[in-house]
Length: 419
Image 1 (cartoon, helix red, strand yellow):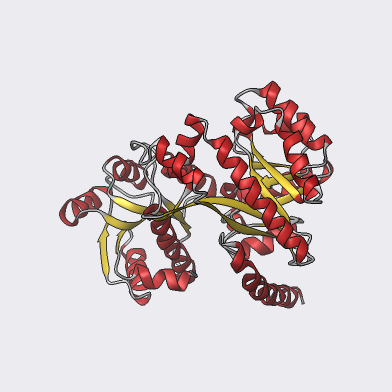
Image 2 (cartoon, rainbow, N blue to C red):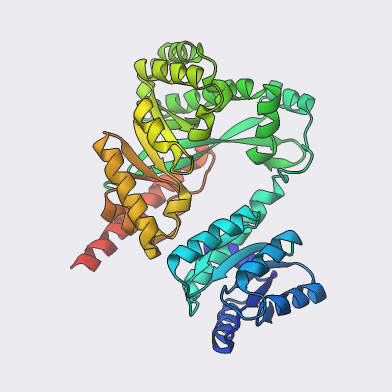
């Protein structure tokens, strides 16, 4: 669903604007009204906002300033999180970018859903895009369950789902910035539950890792991914597929042999499989993980370091593991076109990766301005909602046709801007 479709769904939701400047607050209210949103509340500082919430109850989205008298925005966000008074937050502030980045991290550490940040005065298009993300969050949460709650499934239910092969793959495209071609897809696991519909992985993966079922799930994911690779090959496509490997899988040093035999039997090259590894997955049993990764690389598989920069030992991992691809985490990418620090981090990471002979993937690209920035900085591959959401493999063909037209328009607009 695009941002306009999401916005249509948002019109029945409640918004609270917390802003001490009367003019800025008035502008925000007018912009929201122009987007067709009717249930809007307002407050001049954090204390007043808490009184509004006490009167009207939890709201869907809070648009919050930071520097306010009485209770400032930072204090208010803490109260908002503690009392679970909002579905999501947009930070609106004219403060310096470094402070806003700290607040963004703070919001997420509090467990609040952050839709994004806005400069002031509020721009209608940017606000529309951020509000459009709220319905996406609602859709995800309707098929997910709180991580701090008791697991909604039992081990037996997951065993039954495995035996019935109810887990399915969604493909998120990764495209070349230079040509727009579909370079690869990252496969993301979903559970097609017979009663609850499509269930997101955050509600079943932790229990499967705890129970040891993750190995059986990984085997099914690999089997389905290989079927997809065969389908691509039949259509004359050289599209790669990326699969996330858990720490438990990396501890299995016999896995490289099994995987190589599976691909050989299907006459598929190991280079078509990109195995994505997060830094945290290398901490469990480092010796076994390194052995598994070295043997995978030796057999020709591609290795990708996922969520680069979010761990504490990124440079060490680059030095010790022969990665083919570096994925820059979405926390650095989203909004980088408006943030000099994020731009500098991305620029440095691209330069580092290219010097080490790796290709660079930017995750979480959602805005055209960020696309143009990444192109300017020499990023190789892009992945994110701006390009495509995850989808069943049956929808890839239609998406690709639409995307090629969009890519030509992107090129035309960028060339016009340079003339």
